[in-house]
Image 1 (cartoon, rainbow, N blue to C red):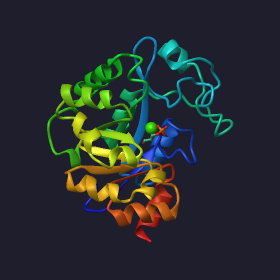
Image 2: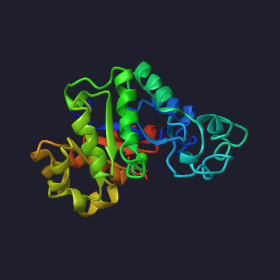
Image 3: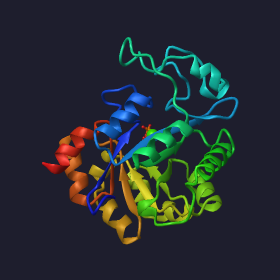
Image 4: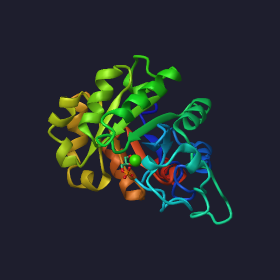
Length: 252
Ligand code: G3P
Ligand code: CA
């Protein structure tokens, strides 16, 4: 949250216009004035964390296969840009590369772990080691932390909170799951992350989270009406595929 106004989070970068999770999308997010960047991370076969949403690379590259069965070098050889912007090939982005960009631009990073169960905690282990290497796991105020881990998996959130008390974590889910506060309390999440569709159904989720000392991160907020809803409810972080539009709607 930025000075009492909702912070804008560029979901997969400025992914409405640019190919998601590429440097062009992340750099556009910074240029458009997003306060934060969201990314999904997966482990490659040789245990590098890369920014890819899907289990496989087919939708967002010219390659084939599951990320977990490919080495980083295999992914490096693929084009992750041209599917969205023909003639603009782009490389896969590693978490290390994204952290460097976010730190140099002074933007908060929301890192979502994907498929943590399959790797039995290895994703969080690698993630926390990466954050430590970059000096990003020091205790401090969750509201101004440089990196926040987000996950639909309660066990992933719990592992982060237990092993890195300085790294804030958000439990993602539908508002109906998060409303009572029990799920977030059980895993010591400092924030909750409802979808905007579920928040429309249960807008009281935000006030209840605040009363319990938790902030709200809402995704994926791409219409003016939903930005207004989040703003009116006092949602702290608004994740959108269109950061510039969200900024203008917030100011308008
Ligand atoms: O930011 C949370 C949101 O990204 C969760 O859904 O599928 O886009 O990762 P998904
Ligand atoms: Ca995500």
